[in-house]
Each structure stands twice: as structure tokens, then as C-alpha cells.
Image 1 (cartoon, rainbow, N blue to C red):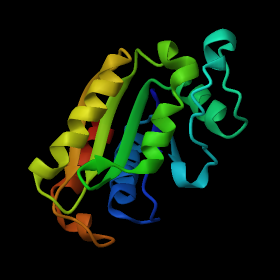
Image 2 (image 1 turned 180 degrees about the vertical axis):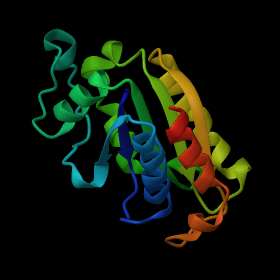
Image 3 (image 1 turned 45 degrees about the vertical axis):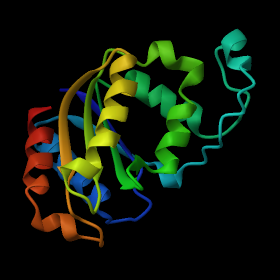
Image 4 (image 1 turned 90 degrees about the horizontal axis):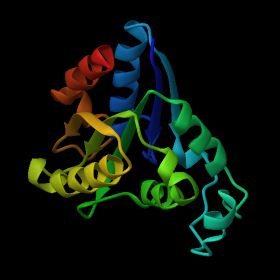
Length: 175
């Protein structure tokens, strides 16, 4: 049994990336894994202040929900990161959370990582986000085990009619 943490940067409940997170979770639970989904929009995560106090103390001076998120990331065997694309980039909430990895960036490796990326573009439009997240999470010492791309989806629920639904479910089963 693996401990799977799903970080959803979807601002919309039942939005396309949120739906794919839940499909992944369904497959993982059926495979007997322990899962937790964190909706990042439900968490208070402020912007990094670039004060670098964390270099001396190992802790961020900002008192918000990031310490809890980082604790859960460290304990996870598998981390799923999901974001819609906005103007060929990950959304701002996910970027804010990633910037706040700084106090523990050296402790966030050794995980299996799955990426879920959605957007109204085809693969060419989602590719930049995939490359960026691969560099970030791979650079931390994680293995990118899978990618699920919800292509050509914009309106809530459109992803339900795509092959990404089965891909997310299968990735969860195989995690």
C-alpha cells in the first residue's frame, strides 16, 4: 500500500483537472492505496517573501498552510500534481505553492510523481507546463511516473468525454 498525496490546483470544484484528480484517486483506492486530495484553493498559501530566513532556520517565517502541505508531501510515496493551464503556464496558485518549497526543497525528493495538466489547447499548448513541472519535480530528485493531459477542454466537465479519464483511472490503479 502506498501513501498517495494529490495536489489539485483547480480553482473550480468539478473542474476538468479536479475531475481527473478524482479519477486517479478512484483507481488508486481500488488498488488498495491510501489517498488524500488537497485542493490548494482551500488552503491559505501566501507568496514567498524572499527573505531567506528559511536557509538559517529550515522553516518559513510565514504562518499559513504551507508547513502542513510540505509535511504531507514528505510523508507521501506518490505525489500527483494537477493544474489547468493559463496562457501556456501552470496556474498562479500552483506556482505560489511551488515557490514556497524553498524551506524544504532538499527534503522533497524520492517520490513517484504524476502530472495532470488540462487546458483548451492540444498537446502543443500543454507541453510547456509539462516541461516546467518535469524540471521542477525531477530537479528535486523525484521520478516522473506518468502524465495525464486533458486536451482541448475548457468548460467544466468537458474532460469526461476524453481519453484522459481512462488514463487517470489507470494511472491510479498502477501507482
